[in-house]
Image (cartoon, rainbow, N blue to C red; front, side):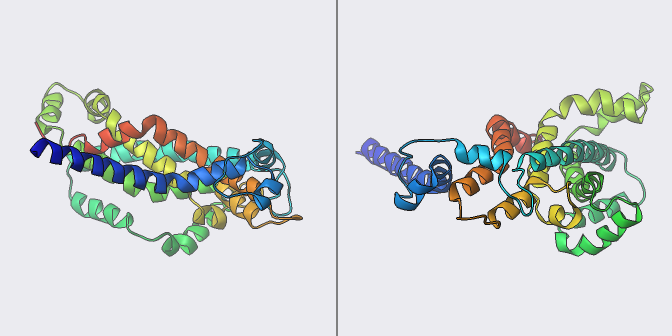
Length: 286
């Protein structure tokens, strides 16, 4: 009797999980199927129906010829703008965060706790608060409306998060290892390279995925600090969806949204399990 009750309960749990998974994935299903239909089938058919004659026309147009305002070059140039922004911003902010976390975890100095608290406070500052000061800073350095300026913005805003991640990870490393390395004559960077870097793969994975997702999906900084020719894909997607030349092409809009979301989806599919491992690494000592 007891085993039967446990089996029923287990099947009920699985059924609930399946139902919630279907509800969660339904918007993605609608986006994919709509992007594979022509506009006539969308207007006359069922939203949930599979495409009668699948076509990649909408994907090709979204990538290469859709209008994003006054220009009709598709999302391709903006996609590569985002790559030019994301790659250096992620690498620089991750490296700075690793060094900051290492210092704050194992090289205490006067005011280090206050500095860490200030960085922690920086994680909770809303984007809107820094818009005007950052615009003034970029104008002062001649970086307004440039890819370099956007990289700088994301590095500055991301360092607080990357420092927090690395500091909390490095705190679990025994301080005795650092002292033993110092007795052997190792300097600051040698200790970091030979002791901390080899064990940092989990937290590097977490930080890179976090920063990549935040920067790629950013819209506010992109729309405020970019200019003609330097806009990221999120800004271009907004312009595309709000631009109507003739009739509204929902299939192109859906294809464009999927193109914009594809890199983050790929990152999570390929590295999602490492992200979870990295978050839990160092949570328990011993």
